[in-house]
Amino acid sequence: MGPTIAAVDIEEEELRFTSEAALRAWRLFRVRQDGNGGLVLSSPMLHDDTTGRTPLWPFVEARAICWQGHDAPAAGCRCGIYGAIPGTLDSLLGYLGDTDYELDPWAYGEIACYGRVFVDMRGVRAQRAKLLRLALPEDSWPREPTVYGAVAILRDRYCVPVSKMDVVPQWVIANDRQGGGPPDDADLKLDLERLGLWS
Image 1 (cartoon, rainbow, N blue to C red):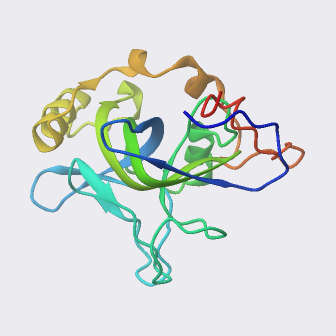
Image 2 (cartoon, rainbow, N blue to C red):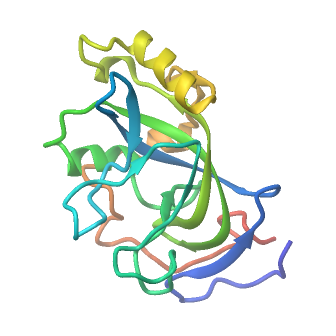
C-alpha cells in the first residue's frame, strides 16, 4: 500500500505490480479466426502503424510492445496493454462504436496487470497481463462458430473460464457511450485514492 495522497493534476502515474499481487482490470477483445480452424483474441483497435493490423493475443499471458521501439508502456506514449478499472473513463462498449467497421465478434476479458503499469483517468496501460476469464455476448456471434462452439474453442486455447455476460461488473456495462475515449468535458485529474489504488 502506498502513501495517502491528495488529488493532483497529473496526466498519469507509474505504479508497479507483481504477478502475485496484480491489478485486475477488464478489457475488450475482438475474436478472430486464426487460420487453422480456431479462434484467437485480438486488440479491438489498431495500435501498430507499421503492419496495419491489430495485435493478436495468442497466449494466456501477453507482454506489451510499442511499434516506436521503446519499452512499453512508456510515459507520454499511449502504448501498453489496456484495461479499465472502476472510476476510469474509457468506455469499453464505446470502442465497439469506434470500430463498427469490424465484422468479427467481440468479448470482454478480465486481466491481471503486472510489471510497470501506468494509470490515468482513461484506464491502465500495463507491461504484462494474464487473461483470467472471458465473457461472450451471445448476440454478437455469427452462425459459425456459434457462441457455444466459441466457448469450447476459447476455453481450450486459453485454459480460462468462458462465461456469459453476467460475470461482467455493472460498472463496465453502465459506462456505455458513443465512443471509447473520455467525453470532451471530462475532468482528467488523476486521483489514485478515488480509483482505490492508494488509500
